Image (cartoon, rainbow, N blue to C red; front, side):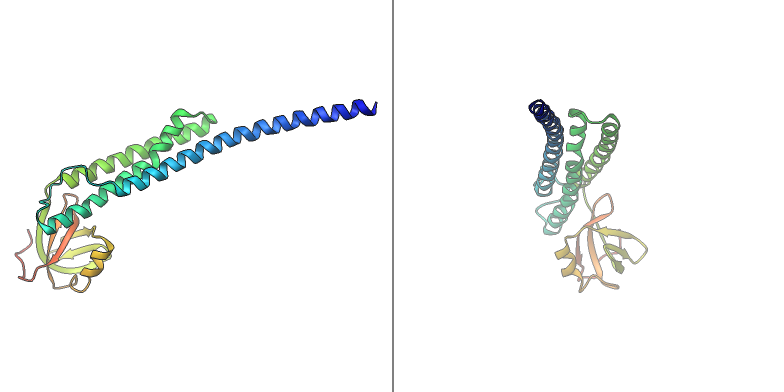
Length: 202
């Protein structure tokens, strides 16, 4: 009798371990899928932030000011591509791998909205990079953060690198004439002090 009970307990324990093992395996598979998707997303993000320009620039790259402008505007495009890289793998995840119905629907909805929105932003940034920049000369009224106001009320957003912005601080202040290179979106990719006083703002 004792032997039978022992065998029964042993068999029951083995079945329980198999069942538990199966559940753990399923969880491991899902964790592996999530981990793989996350790794791909991070990899694409890093790639997007370092991808060189593959579009023709609207700026004249033989001009140093316009070349600096093109570099800063391209960084905007890289950032937009990085946002696409973050959400695109999760859309693929939702399409390829099944999960709970409600969870998959939510992920699919959020990822689709993210891909559409970030792709639109990337196309807008790429179009801005390829467009002809506008040169504007004027006198600084004031600068707040990354927004510059010229005398006359016009304001623009500075997309200079942190190093460029720091080096411009001594003269990027009220009353100083400057020359700006501006994208169609109103983003300043290059700014220089205009020692000649500059023409009136365009």
